[in-house]
Image (tube, rainbow, N blue to C red; front, side, top):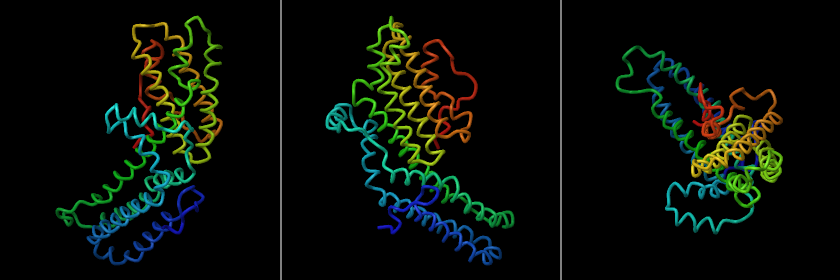
Length: 312
C-alpha cells in the first residue's frame, strides 16, 4: 500500500507521483555529467524511466482500485451482447452515482502526468540527444519507449473519463422525471416552452448538482472536459430520439427547446464555476448538439469542429 493514500497535493493529485518525479529529476541531474560526455546513454535512461513509469501506472491503478472498479460496467455495452447487458441493467442499484473524491485525485494525477510532469523529463532527455553527432544514433529511435507510456496514459485518461460520463448519464435514466427522451415524448406539440421548462426542472436540478460536485472533485481542465463530455452524451440521447422518429416532425419543437435548455444549463454552470479561466471553445456546443440542430434545420454545423477537443 502506498503511504500517500488519502493525502493530496495543492494540485489535487497524489503526492506519491509528485515524489516519484522529483526523484527522477534528481537522478537525471546526477547523470548529467556522464550524459553530456556520452549522450548515447540517454537511450538507456529513457528505457529505465519508461519502466519506472509503467510500474507507477500499475501502482496507481491498484491504489485506486476501489473507485475504478465500479466504472468497469460502463464499458460492458461495448463488449457483451444486448441480452446480457439488459440482465445486468436490471440488477443495477437505483441510487445515483456520485464521483468519489479519490477518483478525482486519480484522474487529476493522470492529467498532470501528461501535461506537466512527463514533458519536463522529455525536454531534458531531448536536449541530451540533440548533442549527439548526426548518424550516431544508428537504428535507435529516441522517444519510442516513453511514447508508449504516453499512449497508455492517454488511454487511461480517456477511458476513465468516458466511463464517468456514462455513469452520470445513467443517473438521468433512474427516474422517469429525469429521462430526457421521456421528457420530450411526454410533451405535446401544443405545449409551449414554459411547459417543457417545467418538465425539465428535475433533470436541470440534477445537472446543476452534478456539475457543482464535479467542480469540487476535478481540477479546472479535467472539470471542463467531463462537463463537455456529459453535455455531449445528453445531446446524443436527444439525437437518438430524433433519428428514430425522422418522419414525425411533431417532436421537433420539444427537442429544439430541450437542447436549448441543456445548452443554457451547461454553459451557465461552467461560467459560474470557472469564470474567466474558461476558453471560448469550452462553451461551444458539442458535436451531438450540433447534429441535433442540423437535423432540426437550425444552426447547421460549419467551420472548425471543436466538439471533441477534450479527448486525447
